[in-house]
Length: 309
Image (tube, rainbow, N blue to C red; front, side, top):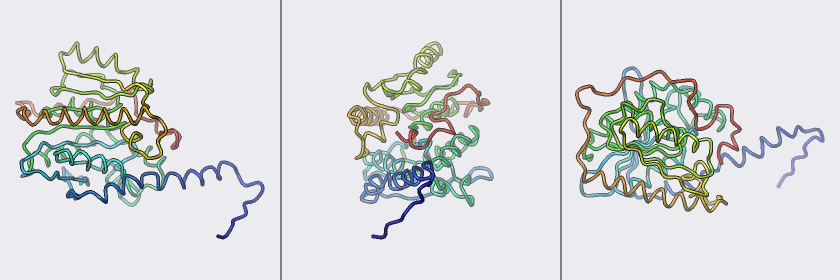
């Protein structure tokens, strides 16, 4: 092994960046390994709407009958190996899962999530996505899923972190959703157009997002909407990912991950017995302009290492 001698005045900030890079790059090898070992059918599809094409990762369950479709909205870290592994795990429970890469076309050289050189660059790009474009991409995913021969016509949406907030926002826009599952994401200011039941999954040690839940609960109640939030004590933000990461040292994350996944699957299975929702006469609700006071899952300039925790 060849040793590299660093100058005595080598900047500490550069050294820390080098060390962090070696930690970040293989950080989700465990997720990729599980994904590669899966027996389920994976494919990438190009979803076209207007002049835009969005790449999506699709996983099919190994079942005899038609299945509901779950649109999975990734974290602020883009369509990562963990997001795809989560899609595969849900498919293993009997659901078709479509996970669009919402960074398609916005990465270096016109690429998507995998083209960004660092986690910080990915965070900044996701934070800057236009809300109308995101909803249009999700519409394309839902329309594609609803008409798959193997689908039963029922559509649900589940999102994590940044994707949790976008899940809530999509529920205000899309009228034929059977359910929306919000994982540690803030609610929208206007909930009046929501038609699907919304189920919240929050961390006890995540005051930044947890502090928004009482106002969201009050707004949903006043509007006569179904909203069932559950807070998992002892867990931190991002527990669905952290709770299955082999390097996790917070027991509350493991417990929340196990209980949260069990609850999610139970609620999804209940959809199979329910009738499919429909658009109604008005179609999707028009998009409202995003308010500057909204709560992001992570600020665009947040430190990459702390954001990953």
